[in-house]
Image (cartoon, rainbow over all chains, first blue to last red; front, top):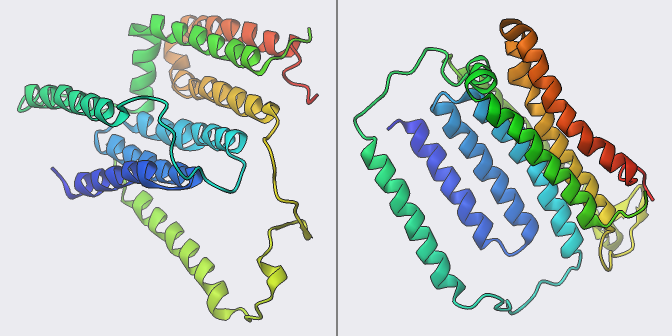
Length: 165
Length: 116
């Protein structure tokens, strides 16, 4: 466990806590950006270079834009809701249970893989190695992604309510 | 895996310049506080406080940007593998793009690219 991991993991957790604790939604988004950048560093420390770059371009770049637009669309008012309305009953309990469940799964996986340090190729995680895997062994998944994106495109147009043809 | 020390130095430099520039204005600039200076302004004019909601068109632009950004990101690994994959790789991307072209045509037909 290197110093880099500890620092990056600490920043990631701090960013995640900031998302939940921030009063203003815009501050939550900024905290999420911090979290994403720390995650990119963690990806980099795992030699997943392509994932690190994509994490920054897609998540810290594009998805953040989307979040800011959602905030602008929904809460363009100055005053914040004073008393949070409870739409979902017992959400604290449910959230804690789901969080603990996820933690248990991740812990089990981490403990099961301990000690079994697999040999990785020298170019593991680089864009070239990623592309080779994506376009040869996992080509079906790659083509399927196009359909997922197609569904998203059509979904946006329908949800926004563009009916002129 | 190569060393990322240059990247770290670069990031530290970026943070340093950003912090110095934002603090320097406070140290060096004249301070003549006036009520109007604290108002929100845009292009030299005070802005009206934003009431109500944004039009949903903005959201659609953002969403389509994200989707086509993901599409563009899939070009990076493909471009680096194209010479090895030869014609097979070309047809892979043609199939990928053909599916997305359907979505593109759909948005176009529905007027998603026009600001009305």
